Image (cartoon, rainbow, N blue to C red; front, side, top):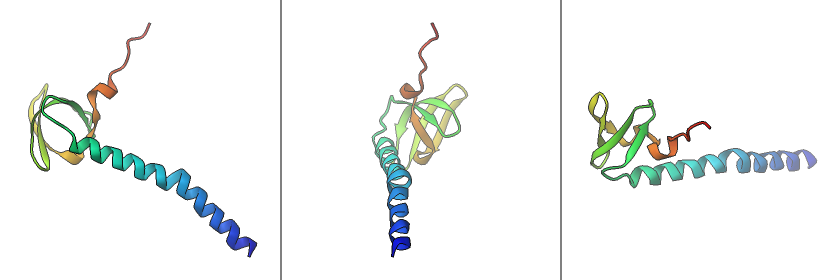
Amino acid sequence: MQEMLMFGMILIVFYFFMIRPQMKKQKELKSFREGISVGDKIVTIGGIHGKVLEVAESTILISAESGKLRLDKTAISSSAEDKLVQPAK
């Protein structure tokens, strides 16, 4: 009986420290991707920084230094404003 109780406790700890935070992060990323609008500055998973020119149902068109790129929304990592680093003092 104690072994089953310990196994259950391990599963509960695993859920609260591993699964639940990951699900929360995925939900936030999904809502961010759905809320992208024209003019937003974004960073892709590959590290490309760009400005959104056009938003379609599942793709976006961005302007980067190398030109215009059409990307799938799932390739967006975060907002470029989040990645700006404060200058060193």
